[in-house]
Amino acid sequence: MPVKVVGVVGCGLMGSGIAQVCAEAGYDVIVSEVSGDLLKKGLGKIESFLARGVEKGKVTAEKKAEVLGRLQGTTSLEELSGCDIVIEAVVENLDVKREVYQVLDRVCAASTIFASNTSSLSITGLAAVTKRADRFVGLHFFNPVPLMKLVEVVRSPLTSAEAFAQALDFARSLGKTPVRSTDRTGFIVNRLLVPYLLDAIRAVEEGVGSVADIDEGMRLGCGHPMGPLTLLDFVGLDTTCYIADIMFDEFRERRFAPPPLLKRMVQAGLHGRKTGKGFYDYSQDPPKPVAGLI
Ligand code: CAA
Ligand code: NAD
Image 1: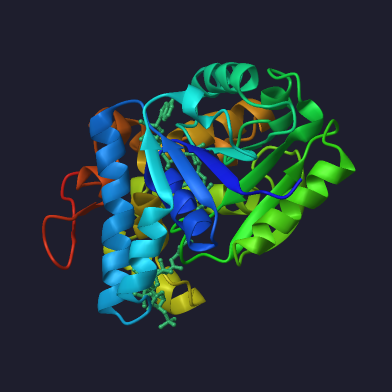
Image 2: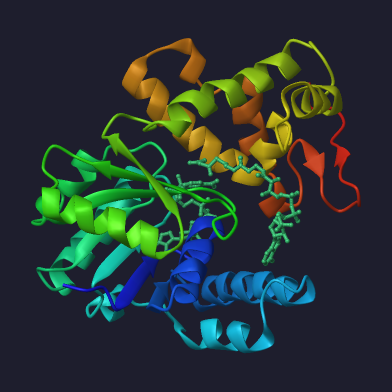
């Protein structure tokens, strides 16, 4: 069945980007949040990204209006009942995601495909909550979604060949390049990226170099667009901590364990760009490393 209407659950960092690229690709999009305030904030992120695109000459004002016109917000999951595919991008917490899927499974048509944007949870475990495990896939987007070309398309042992092919086609229809992964914790990219990011935090803890020098080292020494500590602030330290906990639980290897500094920063509300402070303080331009972390 061709996809016409896309549902997105969660309009945070990732959900807002996913809703945006789906609307840009011409789909009608319904995006849900837990409250009117969070919905307004999430839709505001899309509006300002598109406005910056207009300023940069990358998007026309007409296209911006067209994209915004295809987006509809809701605070009720029930309103996603008419969607052909639902992409879930709520917090990286198994219980929260399970609850969402139980509602969606009840209200959506049997033909609706479910896709999780999870970074590290098991697609098989999430699919098992529903009665449509054959039509359940991972669609793992990268941050910032409107700019990053990759989507990991993940199949569980229960995903049908047909649903997997549809998910690959859907990712291509968004102008993304899909890679295929089996359902192993962290899939391809986070399996390699997360230990690197956590090691950068351990390097800070051990006083190997300053936050600024570790970032500069990896940017100029390895040609990365962002140093690891800037990237951690970008991803969100809360989200990274959830991911590390899940990966460590799966593999029981130190390289996946959340370092104490990460846990303390999350406890202190230093979640990165989204809270204004993480390894850097974003109230200043350019952002300055936060003092007194160790
Ligand atoms: N609308 C349209 N286009 C825009 C835009 C906007 N609002 N903002 C930027 N662009 C365009 C720019 O015009 C530019 O296009 P050209 O290349 O054609 O000139 C391009 O996007 C890049 O933008 P900038 O030059 O402003 O920014 P940059 O070069 O500093 O790149 C970045 C920004 C893409 C974020 C880059 O820093 C980067 O790649 N960082 C690393 C991101 C990364 O690693 N993400 C993965 C995180 S891990 C993850 O997501 C998985 C997980 O599970 C945790
Ligand atoms: P976020 O905290 O920015 O956004 C999550 C949003 O989900 C919040 O706004 C929250 O209010 C909302 N939410 C929670 N329960 C909900 C519900 N029942 N219904 C609707 N909305 C609900 O987190 P994020 O960074 O966008 O991460 C979302 C998912 O994407 C996670 O699974 C994460 O692992 C994954 N992911 C994150 C990144 C990243 O770089 N941050 C990259 C790829 C994948």
